[in-house]
Structure formats: C-alpha cells, structure tokens
Image 1: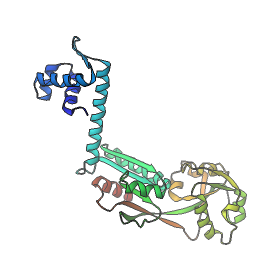
Image 2 (image 1 turned 45 degrees about the horizontal axis):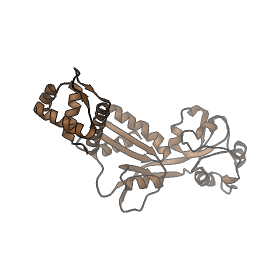
Image 3 (image 1 turned 90 degrees about the horizontal axis):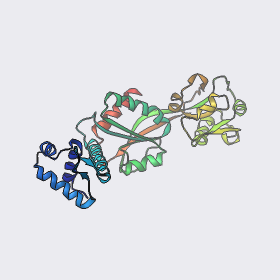
Length: 288
C-alpha cells in the first residue's frame, strides 16, 4: 500500500506544479516533498518531467493522480457514512418493496433537496432480500410486509397499505363475469394479492387462475400501463397505484371490506438508528 503522506505530496505537486509551493502549502520542507516523490518513483517509475515548466506528468503520473482522487473521494464518502452528529449530512440507506418504494423514493429526494449533504441510497426488493440486506448491514433500514421474528432485528409498524382492484377508467365491474370479460394483468405478487382480495369481493369465485390472462409485468411502475390502455385489470397495493402517472385512465373498484397490509420498518437491534435515518423516518411519516 502506498504511503498516504507520499500521495498527499504528489497530489499537491500535481496541482500547483512547484516543489516550493507544495512544501509551503503542506507545511513541510521542499526536501521532504522531493523525498516523497522519489519514494513513489522507486515503486512506480517516473511520475513527472522535471525539465518542464510547469511540471508535466508522465502517463504513470496521470494514473497515480487519478488514484489519489479516487482515494480522496473514498475518504470523504467514509466520513459521510460515519458522521452521525449532524442529521442533515451523510448517507440514508433504505431497502423496500417496490410499491411503497415508489412512494418513498421521491419523498426522500425532496428531503435531499432541502439538505444537499444527505446521500440517498434506495433499492427495491422482496421481503426476504430486505431482511438479508439489513442483517448484513448493506442497508441501515428496511421495509417488509411480514413482521420478522428474528431477534437481531427491531420491527416497528410504519404504515398501512390497502390492496386495490384497479380497472380501466371506462370499465364497469359488478360481477365475476365482468372480470372475466376484462382479463387479468399479472405481476410477481399478483396471484397471491388477487386471491386474497377477490375472495372477499366475490366470495365463492372460481379463482384468479381461471381468469383469462391478458399480460404480465415484473416492473412495479409498469403494471398499470396495460390497465390504463383498457387491456385488463389487476390487483396491486395502493402506493403503486398512487405513483401511476395517468390516474385519469384507471379507477379503483371500491370494496366494502378493506384488505390492508401492515408495513414494518426494520433495523438491527444491536445499535440505534443514526440521527439522519431517524430524521428521514420522521420526514417520511409526516408526508405519508
């Protein structure tokens, strides 16, 4: 590993182009700067053309300067991740299912606009991946639809999200036959969601698997696209429907008995959430 002080001297020299000025800015002697550069060149080969004024970097020197810049960015990124004294500075990392994620990510970006020193990192994932990512510290916070029983995790109720039967804006649905005429737009969680909701809306129905399937999408933001075009109906969580860009082209078939899922916020039990994560959670709950 290259000595950090040597790299600091080289980066300063590449910036100002003078051994004397580099030494003055670093608070060391000119001989010290020369010695640092000499040590680097013993390992990496010629880095600067000393006959040029101002100094000119060799190809190896340009590669080393790029490495110095990468090291500097990494150090600043590490400082952001470790800093916890300021709730408006540092990384906020959240992993969640797609539906609630569609709602939360724009809200987190609004928070970042207010506090540009925040760094928002968000990922869509199913429950199993969310739990694994939080347990292995890849994300500080996660949202799941089923409360985990792992003692390494703290799970707190975060929000409630109804499932909705969504049809084209021009459709009229009052019977199972109306659904058969429309056809079903499926998605990865669609069979389970539709079975749960439609069993309440149409008791004794033949089952969603017996409906004509008109399409499938594994992208949460695109599931309602064929519905809006009149190609079928689907069952999705409310926040996915709210995020759709053309709400006038779809409508929700109201159900007398709501089917509501609880969303659980999880994090590691061994240590508290960072102050910036707590601030982000408070912001999200206020907006929701």
